[in-house]
Amino acid sequence: MEITEIRRLKNGRYGLFSADDFLLSLSGGALLDSGLAKGDRLEEEQLAHLRAVVQKEKAKEKAYRLLTGRDHAKGELVRKIARTEGEEAAKEAADAMEKEGLLDDTAFADRYADELFGKRLFGKRRVVYELVHRGINKSLAEEVCAEKDIAPKERALAFLEKKYQHAAEDEKARRRAFAGLERAGYDWSTAHAAMEDFMA
Image (cartoon, rainbow, N blue to C red):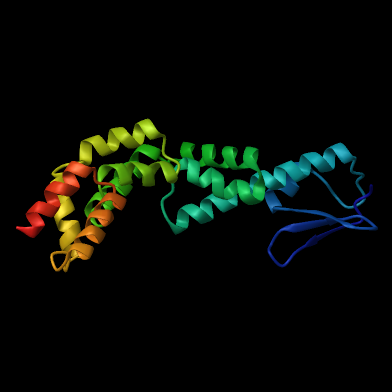
C-alpha cells in the first residue's frame, strides 16, 4: 500500500494514511527513524513492525505516566500496562524503567511496608499479602516484613485503640474487634494478647 499522506495530529503524533485508510500514528522520533515519506510503499510486514514499535512507545509513555502518579512495584506496573499494550511491550517498558532507576522493587517494598505497618497498623501477614498483591515477589515481601515486624502486640493494641475504641462495651463489640485484628493480619496469639491488654 502507498502512503498518500503524513499529517501531524492534534496529539502531536504523525498520522500515516493510504488512499483508503488511516494506517497508524507515530511519534516524531519513530517517524524519523522509519525514514518513511509520502509516496513510499509499505508492505504488510513493515506495517506490522511499525505497529509493534508504536505499541512499545505507548507502553513506555504509559509507564512514565503511571510512575509520575505514584510509586509502583514492577509486577503491578506490568499488569497495568499489559491491559492496553500487551504483555511483551509492558515487560519491555518495565525493564526500561528499571534500567533508568525509576523502578526498584526492594525500595518500593521497604517504603510500602513502612506505610502499612506504621500508618495502617497492619500485622505481618496482611503486609506480606498487600506487597504480593502489588507485584512484589513473596520471598522479598517476607524478608522485608521480617525486618520491620517489631512489637506486633503494641501495634495491634494501637490498632484497637484507633479502630475499636468501644470494643470493651459488650461481647459482640469484642468479637468484631478480634475479627478486625485477624483481617488486619495479626495471628491469633498476638490478637488475643492485644485484646487482653485492651480490656485490662
